[in-house]
Image 1: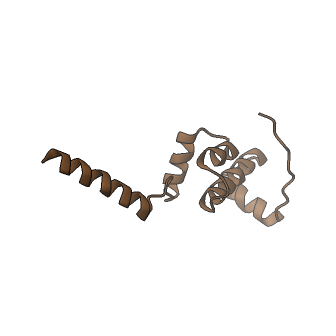
Image 2: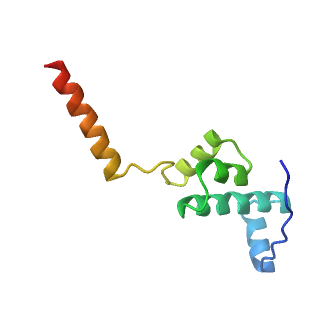
Length: 97
C-alpha cells in the first residue's frame, strides 16, 4: 500500500509526558496517534471500520478489539435495524403456527 508521510508537531511537554506514560520511542507515539485518530474518524463516521483499521495499521478484528477496549461499539444497531429484525421474527413466528 502506498503511504504518505505527514509531519505532526506536538508540544515538547506533551512529548515528554507521553514518554513518561511508557511511549518510549517516537514510533510508539506515532502509532498511538494513528490509533487515536482512527478511533475518532470512525466515531465521527468519516472512515468505515475497514479504513479506520487501515489507518491504525491493524486488521479489522484487531481494530474491533481496540474499539471494545475503549468502550466504543464497532457497529450501530439503529431503530430501523430493530424494526427489520422484529418483522423477520414476527414472520418466522407466524410461519411456525
